[in-house]
Picture 1 (spheres, rainbow, N blue to C red):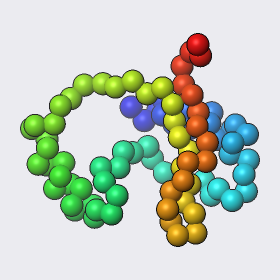
Picture 2 (picture 1 turned 120 degrees about the vertical axis):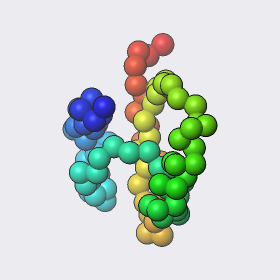
Picture 3 (picture 1 turned 180 degrees about the vertical axis):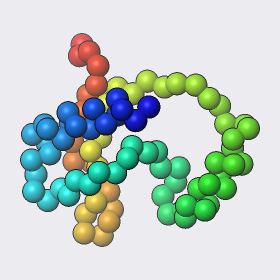
Picture 4 (picture 1 turned 60 degrees about the horizontal axis):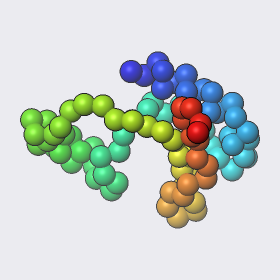
Length: 87
């Protein structure tokens, strides 16, 4: 669901990790990347191919990584946000 993800994004964007001037924040909806360097058409074809055989269910997410592109558009991890209770 988009609403809880948007609330999490808003909370993260309010944190000190997002004070860095070099990061450009855009209002991009939450999404998952199937594979880098595939066209939208190729991604949609993969979705169709795996629709019947792909497992479904849920997963645990215990951290989020902030990744930002460098000058060559290679993405690098700039910060890690741990989610949930700390031990």
